[in-house]
Length: 269
Image 1 (spheres, rainbow, N blue to C red):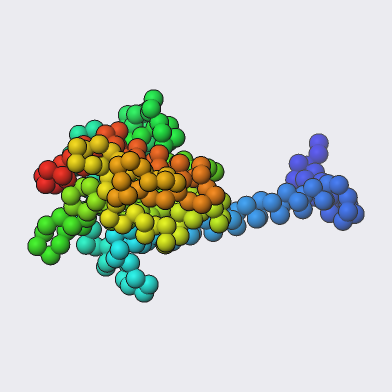
Image 2: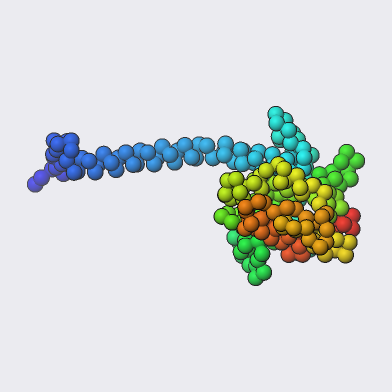
């Protein structure tokens, strides 16, 4: 009767005796290297995940500070951002809810949850589904009066979904700034949405006219409503410009922040 342990030793010895360029040894070395490399990459990814989350949060805070005109290189971002008060907003009625923690609620993830989102039949921003809840940021002055509101927006351009923020004055109708923090539009063309000169055009533009009709437009020519509602389209980037126009108008319409903007105009926030 054969000894299994001696049999295994025999197999190992026979494997070690094979030439270095034999097929079994080549396959073994390749598989071993793949396993070691994958374990190393996975370990590094897990180890760095907390750092990535911190950097992701800091990047969001920097973008909110920038769109509110409060960012300067070298500032303590966390300290500067502390003046903003986040709230989870229910889009349908424009009211705040305490159902979720505003510090951890993820509206983009919620958009994939059928219980927390709705499918869009009319979808000019090409986002498919919309979370029923979003986190907005309020900035108040030293006396507690509302100064600005920062609203997240997103929608499809030419090659990608653009994610950003729009800042409105306390009246809910005057635009203070627009800032995109993630997109993959064409460098030198659609990516000019990041150009400070183009972004500066949004300052002091108005969302709607006196009758409440949504008028803000990104277009090549000034609309009939007037210059105060007009932002020049990006040169050579017609589809990106149209995408920005669509997403901004969608989020500022009744399908987006409309009910909340009505509360701002009424001074009830």
